[in-house]
Image (cartoon, rainbow over all chains, first blue to last red; front, top):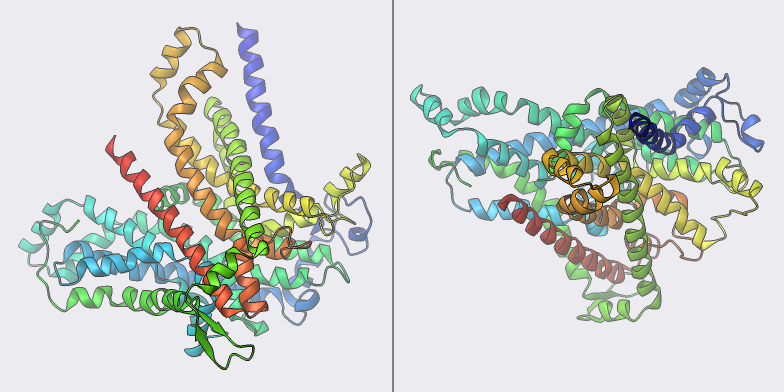
Length: 282
Length: 293
């Protein structure tokens, strides 16, 4: 019996570790490639263990740029990605918490009409309306700007629904008590609703930051100016050069830099991340 | 959904919904209606005049073998990715649910791919399978298999399936773990007392009880493969070789921005919208049912 248990124990762990190896292998190979020099990266078979060029490669990529995107240092792409991800996350949270507040706590004309308009956005991901949305942004003169990168992605039904759900679970006595103390709607929102939804806001922020950071199609369409490239689309520009002169060590270093911020967010805020993921899907 | 205790109407609620409504109108509803309108038009080669042609764009699409092929390919890609990714995640979730030691580090090592952008995931897999240099391609060569996804359409399809499934594993894993934890332990103990082994317990009790989670994940995975995988295809294969990996969302982009066929691209957008709407309705129906019990 004990032997059988031991066998099952080792089997379970072996399967998990094998799965982890399969999942982590691409990341390990990226890291290894990013630590070698150009010559080593043109000889098959490629290395499985890291080399000694990590810091030189970081320096080259961050300040000199790579391949087609030369004269376009990666630190600038990182800044662009950060600005875009932050504006999308903060913008979505702000506008959807306000509209959820209005829809749950006020009785006003066209309330349901507004609700359905927000609901419809759930069914219109950017991929199905690319051309006309591009035209709108072009007509508004928002190409190659942070506004164009973030505002068209800001409206979100999922965030509004999540806040609506949170507000509905807050007991009515809260509002009655606040009113008795003479608080108006703004005071109530600021002093009671906002503090009570703090963890939900944080959880949502984690998910939305990753969503914003990983946007690809949208920045690809509306940025033609190299200074506005985000890192996720910058990698694509570097890959274009691969067929002529593969600079895999630098491309993989860029890929590594593009992944580190969102991965750090997931790993350091694991609980909030899981909470956000399961709540926004409801 | 309105609170029984609420504020009286004033100008304030309109101000509160204003930002979201204006963005929805300008960037969602207006472009979507434009897509709908354009899908009924044919423009001449110079974009100078356009003619209203009713459903001609749609009938043209459905009589175009290229489009029908793309539909089938997308369907195959979607099913293959969903089953590979969900199967792998379910296995890992069942195993991690059983172990107690190291459960936390295991989980951390399994969930991080969620944070990787699809296009970056594509880049990693493309690097591993690079025909001249990639490690995996080199291993395959030493095993006697020649790998070149730039020439071989089936291998290209296989590569984007791998990349897309890999990226989705962590999402499926987290939801399967949550589903497994919701199954009462007493049911499994009862089965064990009746003499069911691990395998029997899984197929007769755990798997049927997981079916709501599985169904939910299937819908989410289909949406993911239809729309979010654009970056993978664009980075790894560009729809090639010879259109072997041209999935629907890539074709909308390609026909609209590269081919400049506005009417055709708009008609494709409309079909994609119908697919999303159908999937969203299925998802909501299912969630209502889950809330009931």
